[in-house]
Length: 341
Image (cartoon, rainbow, N blue to C red; front, side, top):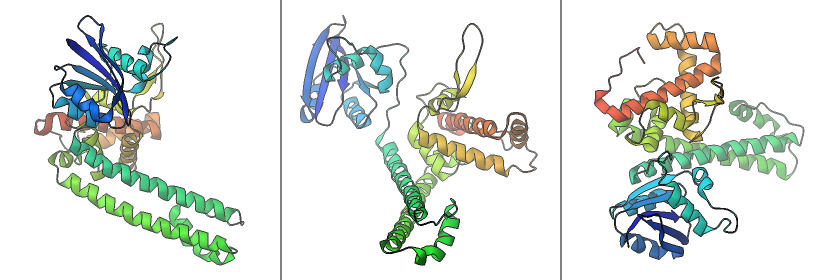
């Protein structure tokens, strides 16, 4: 079979495969391929271009297919949807596979970098820690809502809530007292688990030279450094730091027409977790510049005075994203002079 492009619609157990030859004609159409048969099917194909949507398990399959000499490219599902044929065919797995096969050949398509196994290991730490943080926040919100039903309203800040809740426990009737105590105990356990994951992430960052170089940037600590490294890898999938800032969603959206440039709010595209880490780091930087007179501090202070606090925060976060790409891309060749960030 002279197959040059293959589109695979990923699933848990049943996959759809669509391959075309050098004339663009379907040469391999298999709407139902079991999970056990997918890898042997791809292994017997000659080296070709394989396209898949970036979803659960996509990076694992991409690494597996690369072992057989295939070129694998991942795409966001929203970029594949316009190539799906509608009408009588409707939406099904076979139509999705054909759309992926067509979309992966487009010259202006945007692709998702394939993550290596060690990158996903670090991201597992971050995703698990973030889940515990969200669960802790939900526990405190649930607690605050429950005691409000009994006329007890406490400050939103967690430290104030923990300090003042003890004086009101005896005022809660019946099982309400037990529920609040259990929620506080559960939140304490979550604090311990989050602290353990913070130590694991910090240790992983200290053991990697690239993370150490990232931590030299203002506003980037162990958590942000390891998340950037795990998400971007060596940075070779991006042509410039501006692409990284756009990929994270720290650039303004454009609404330009008729030769008039109109820029709106930041797009907030990409990874929310990565963007939030950069923004939190930028806030810490801006809040700590004080009366510093180095080049970076003067720039940040002037930007805040001219454009306001939040625009300055986003600008610092975007600058850190671009600098992080340069550090990962060029390594030791990228020299960051103190005070000239």
